[in-house]
Length: 367
Image (cartoon, rainbow, N blue to C red; front, side, top):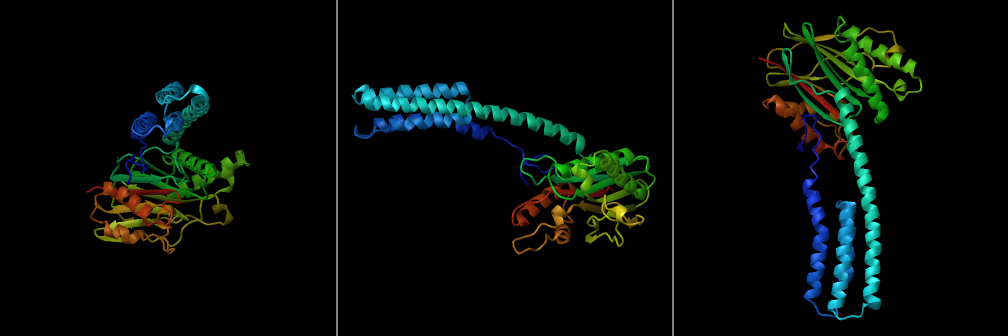
């Protein structure tokens, strides 16, 4: 996995690229002077000096771009004088071109700096929203260790339509992992509503069916409050998990979500969820009760919750990503390494890389 934070996003380190870029205008002027000095007088290289202010506009400040342009103009004049040419018309024409290129480069530099400033402000806001909406999972919670992989599909995005949360309530750990239909800001809005509903109800809900009902009610209330909202028209698949502090079991409730994988010893299998509920915001279409499945979850066992961004990634032949086979191969890997392994493997498997949001939470019962 590329270097990055615990969510699997690559860290951006532009310093090396910027330093090389800042050296290019100077290098262009030096090479031009050397070429002019070591070639015959019939060869003219002073016209190449126009590249220097053009390159400076990409990485230098406005003032620095002006300085580079002025130096290029001085060098252009000196090179023409050194050849013994009259200042008019060739040298003057070249100076006019350098002045024009410098003026355009200064404007480009000003626009670039304004764009970079706006981008920094937007990125700062996105980071705050990220911390509020999708908070980092604690590495330990009650009787379990948690390991997270989260990657938004949109370039440079911090949040997508996949969402997660884990809370230690009296006597148990409760987790939620979900996936909103579609992408974009509407999916993020729906995810934030469901996260807010989960956090508000997780302590007071007596069991997982009651918690699932609170998610449904929360999205319904939001849709009634803002019927024109995109969130009112979207549904989400959700899996809820409850792991008691005492007793080696895990309880699961699926609202149309892919079944998690359970590892016991060296065996990996999907959790049997024979009667899942409908996705959230579709449950009102039928009159049905939620069904909770209880499975053994002993010390050392691992439970992988994931979204379809993992399981439905396809290779060039259209074959789905073999998640169960991969997890069986990685049964001996430490839990903290699995998110990185999964991220790297899914990205390499997909014909177009990661084309959907990816979220996975590995839950390990401590021994």
